Image (cartoon, rainbow, N blue to C red; front, side, top):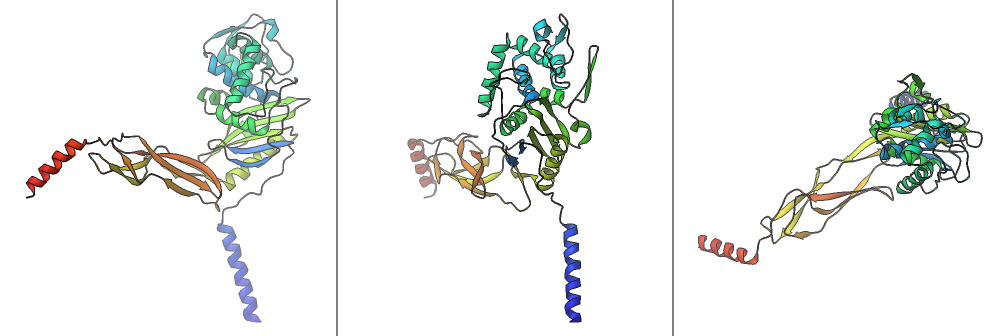
Length: 368
């Protein structure tokens, strides 16, 4: 009996020691949001979600698209004159009719204090009219695969036919953060432009370690909407909550879960040699099949990725350096997560039948 008690004590001590050295993994949080998503920005992997394709009002998070379309159609140095029609209700950077600002100054007013007046001004100037600009917004949404999205205005004010979903907004945010100018502006806490000093409504920029953007929103119909981006140890995540009365805390909880559960794993390195492929009818006998690009993916500690090389047994000369030979297929369980081109490391010229015959004759002569 004594031995059994000692064995139990030893077991519990060992279990406690083991628990203390295993990294703590946060429990998947519950949120107050009607719809939400946590997504890896680089791969697009959805780490956690609820009602992510449900179409809902998105309020001023609309301005992410407004900023991107403006950046892709206007120069930052362009000078814009404010018109009376640009002075809309709601959140504002407090423009005055007749004043002039650069596109860059308007973008700060759009993304930091969420100026509806800045949105109207940018749309009218960059699109040569708001209707054309909104059409560009919808074209961009279609190009990004935002299949549950429709824009009716550049500001996000409640309007029929203006909606999106958490998944689409996460895709938009991931795209937007690849634009260095957008990322710089959306991640700015305060800025002075002319006589204005503007502060960013995104509180997470100052309260959550690793937050680098994005955009807040609120209307009576949409409730509180929030899109943010955070980065730690090479892992960049996007969080979106729609109609969420506790959005600041919910985003922090989503990020703590994501960063403790998933890690940025480098799976393939550009230039890595995967196989040799025989070359028929060439001046050389084979080429190496190299990975054309690097590939990384967010993985939890208990997940493993399996790879399969798809290459022909041989190829016919000529072969050019960089020529695609096949693919490296990566799978996580039953899901395919990536395909990487395998390309030739070198150039192999074709050798004509006449030249081969001469070479063979010369070889035979020398080896007699």
